[in-house]
Amino acid sequence: MVELLPSILSADFAHLAEQVAAAGRGGGTVVHVDVMDGHFVPNITLGPPLVKSLRKATRLPIDCHLMIENADEFIPAFAEAGADWVSVHYEACRHLHRTLQLIAQHGMKPAVVVNPATRVDFLVDILPMVHHVLVMSVNPGFGGQKFIDFSLDKIRRLVVLRQELGLAFRIEVDGGVAHDTVARVVQAGADLLVAGSAVFGAGQPERDARSLLAAAREAAGEQVE
Ligand code: DX5
Ligand code: ZN
Image 1 (cartoon, rainbow, N blue to C red):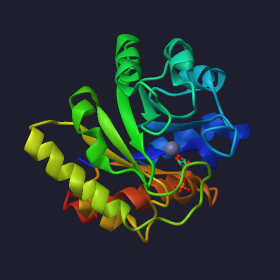
Image 2: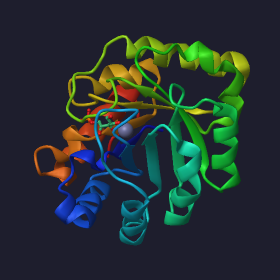
Image 3: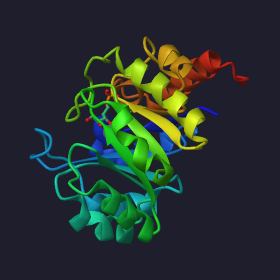
Image 4: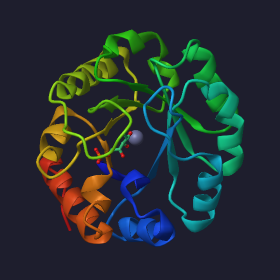
């Protein structure tokens, strides 16, 4: 089943609770929160205090995408704040296995993220530990960038690896997922679709989440109500 994860990076932060509720009415099922530290990526965004407020404002699971260098130091704070899923970058974790264990030990679902330049084959040994793999289809740091087409090959490769290894991790895609790309993303095998500007960019999150999800479901061959 394909799910839509609205990325609040493109939301109006002064009206965040309403914006998230609207995206949820439009069919969003998980809230995607982009955490940036100004070191691993050239931008600074949100942290545990925002997650704590959001936790009170929505019942949807909160997916924290950590684009930070010292994830281990902050995992307890994200757990405390109420995060449900936490993903960390392969490129940012010196001891990725330890970091994924730490996330699980704190009661959250661990996931690994790969940048466009990273081969998914490097993940083989830790795939049994993850709830999902997040494929970046733009270079992380900003919303509204152009989808990088060869990300589709990474998604297809992950589908093959999952089958070969007999695993059940999910495949999430983040960056440039919009009306013009969503069908190809879904057909390549992704089932967790992050979308920021396509949901919040026009100020109509309910309408735009609904239409994007409908396009995704149609591409997946799912029944659209
Ligand atoms: C970028 C973030 C994304 C961002 C996607 O580093 O990880 O989650 O919000 O934005 P769009 O959907 O606009 O490409
Ligand atoms: Zn993200």
